[in-house]
Picture 1 (cartoon, protein in one colour):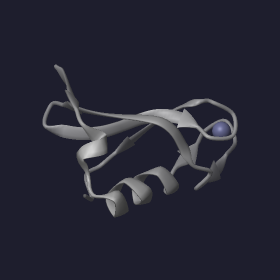
Picture 2 (cartoon, rainbow, N blue to C red):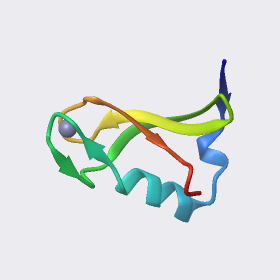
Picture 3 (cartoon, rainbow, N blue to C red):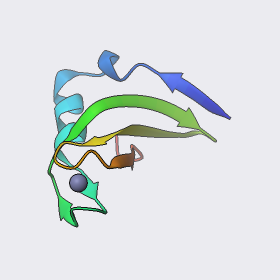
Length: 66
Ligand SMILES: [Zn+2]
């Protein structure tokens, strides 16, 4: 089950870290950046979903480290 969370409620530094540390499968490049981030929880794990800032490809990052 997928449950929405409020990414904007995170500390600004946490948000900046997540938005900068990305991997895009299309660009095959890290740290391009993430646009339109939304956060959700599924099966006890937290993810942020957004679009590659360069090509618009959908990117999902797990926030297990935060
Ligand atoms: Zn990309």
